[in-house]
Length: 310
Image: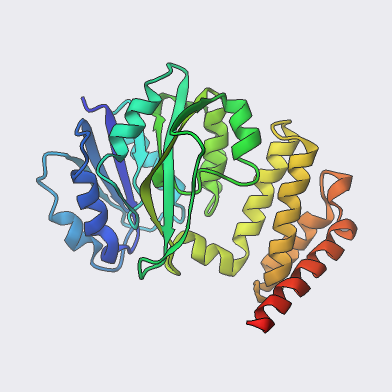
């Protein structure tokens, strides 16, 4: 029985699949199985995946007859089919360094109570230009789950890409079914739920490459405004459950309000109404629309002025 189950959920990522798969097969840590879950792709994904049908590392290849509508439903299906102690969701448009699994397995096994182990990541455009890269001041550190939520899962969200992280399969039972209702930030919701049940190992090594393009889930969500709806839902959940302080809630809420103000005229009418309604009914008096609007206007003017000068 393999120690790690590598789940590759795919939808129309044929241009990136070979690089993704080969980066997994090149891992220095080899005690793993691969599960392909294709969500009814209409491109050449099947042609590429079928080339690995008889590979000894591949345990499952599942082609959906209908699109599930949520990558997190695919996560659940993959976990149910998996046989490993640890799960790695290897997004189909990302890739990694050969030592990623070795470092993450070693990290999660440093402490029996560890439920997540993750590394740092580059975020790149399609032309391989680096948009940003994450960092951590320690080469290896273990943080209590509740402290991790407060310091790393509010502002900013440090695990911003599923491919960065390895986690314990047996903790999936504690994740509410609500996960599958998310279409955009279910991974953020997921990390929060796991952290309630253990510690987090953080590696300071840059081992993951996260590709940002218009055809990814987040790219489509930002255009529709869905990201704001789901992100605000998670922020309010964190605050209402006492997982973050009012100060953290204000900081996260303010950032989302400013981000929304920048693009509100580009968002679809129905979703725009929903987002504005959420902002009007804040859980904290500190985050009222009346208080946040002047800040957002000032930030927008400052942003426009900088762009004009360029």
